[in-house]
Length: 477
Image (cartoon, rainbow, N blue to C red):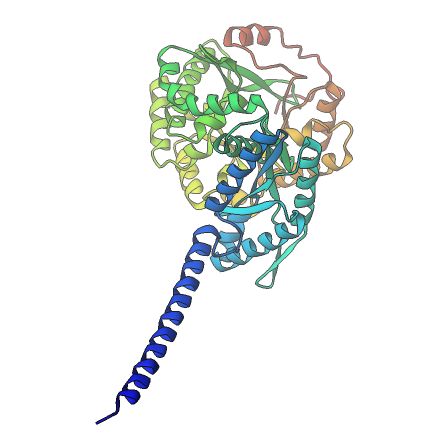
């Protein structure tokens, strides 16, 4: 039987071991809590602060400026080609790209700044001591310069690029939600215009509101006859004969006024409203073109087709039904599609285009020369004409490089049997040059601006066939 002293020492030893176990568990629990807190505040992939931590620091910056005055900046950033890289090279490579971008962003900003990843390829920066617009712009230029350097991923070298939107407190918002929303709008403006970065302005807010509301107004616009069709002539440069017209839509909106296509097409293209809008434009244009044919005018009608419509399996049947109802021959309609729209889903687009072609509808490739389409797709499509992008044509009188590109496009298209349209010709000199470079057709302000149908008919009666593009006009083919 053990003595009382021995039992006391044994109990003390057990107690000491229990204390050590409790201390170890306490440390492990503290470490686990730290890890959980880190995971709740930092992005697991890049190690940057996440949305939650960023919003907290943004609120702190607002509270500080409310007390002391002054301003600061929020930068919203989106990688320009991340989706293409992620889809083509794989998600592992995409993750590696995001990690490298995060590392580069850390080297650009100051210790007092916060760079966070909001999700996907979207990053945001808080510049709490950036008190001037010039200072914010300077940071953007550093970021752009840093991210423009090629990135090596999985043995491949890629260029990524970034678009940045700037919103400044308190001028562009007095709360975090408003600042982030306005920085986001500015970022999309920068992406759309290819400027690298853009500062938010009030016009963008009005534009965003309009874009959000317009898709819901399409049905009313059709019912209330708010859509106005204008037509721009297309001329054969060899004979100077007017061979067709392009239908262009204006919108007489009761709240937003007279809207040009650039002010509403993008907004409704992102919604299901683009379908009834497109079919209504086709229906009304077909009716007016048929009337002109019955009056003895043989004009081909060209209509722009949105990328969303191009990938709609029902479109060929619906277009053919409209053609049948109008009584216009199918080859009297030419649908214009862009390179970029084709490349969203080339196989699906090709299938839809083939069905349209089988029904007799003609196809034109619009904005050609600045996109990324592969030539093998062009050779596989039943194309009647190619329209050279306006950005190449508008400087044709002064830019020798643009002339070389246009000549190359003309030679390619001639070998494939396509007509080539020089779109955006704004002077007689431009028409002469386009003809020499190989364009068979032209369209632009040097010929005529878009006009209402009645104005078009009057203009056709007075079209000056004696106009000299390049010496005497050749006889019509």
